Image 1 (tube, rainbow, N blue to C red):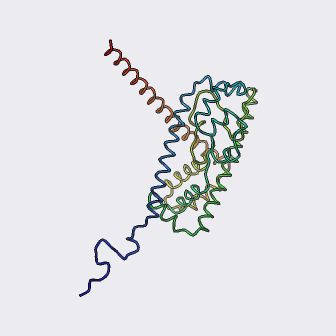
Image 2 (cartoon, rainbow, N blue to C red):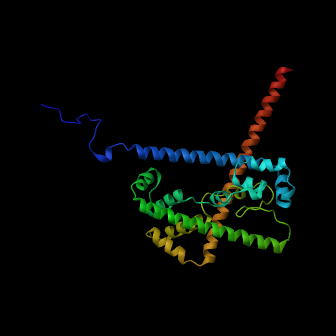
Length: 282
């Protein structure tokens, strides 16, 4: 009797049991990208935390008097903000709008984020679900992400203009020359000024509102919550945005504090090793 094809139990004809190398490679690439982004953020944090306060004060009060060595300190941080502080006119349009010290949302990642918010997919289930979408639907999500990104940029510029106007009324003084979108430095290094959240503050504000609504009425879906959010007066939305901004800043400042503690411990350990070596030699 002839053996039926694919009788080996290690094989299967069911499509759902077949290994999809594309999905696995996409997941691995996403994990690698997230790890690399986290590594870069940590490196930038450590670089900014090492800059002396007097250099920040000079960059804020008299940016035109920075020496080449002081400008190089900011350039060595390796991000757009350092480049803008060192040489305000050197940033390109792509650098200003594509990264830097404002809550940027790039279109592909933003589209995936909105898709996740709409569908409720999380973890490893998001990429397979996204991969089977028609390209037209992906483009629609990316267009929504781009609109959200532009809204966040406009709101951010408005906040900067409002802050500059209030500072001028309170204590007029010369402001540093910087490219559009560059945050003014205000004294010692602060993580929320140097490398804020990669998502728009408006998104965090909406999430705070959503958590409160869902806690009160768990039966509401995403679109019902979004409709209530859009119906809120601008002042109430601003309150949620301010709360979100405070949370993000507190998290980033705590992260900077942890980096400083680690650096101090490492310096103390190196000093102890050097002292021990000197004692042995003597």
